[in-house]
Length: 145
Image (cartoon, rainbow, N blue to C red; front, top):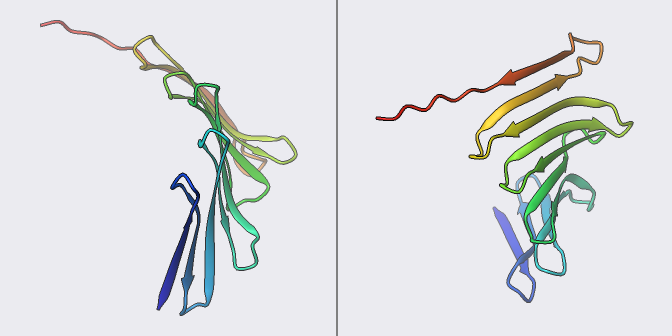
């Protein structure tokens, strides 16, 4: 037996969704947060006690375009962040510890058609494996018929 309860705000947006599993007696709650314009700014997953298990935060520019997404889950001391350009393409992805150590970073550049032209990848081996830092270049050939 299970139960699901959803609460909406006055604009019809989902504010909370609580799911209860009667077999395990566990209730998980998902809380959506919005800014004054109605844009989704965050999603939090809470346990029975209301403690945050996972959090995803969204940053938008003045036009409402997504510019960054930050996640903290599974490893509470590590934050993942993705930054986007005006075409909503990811230009930078990073995993950073609370101490500020970069665990991994991927940076991308694009041509005027939105095709990826270069990728820089850095992976910190943290002394447990070899750290890697490399570049990928993409070239496109166009054939006219």
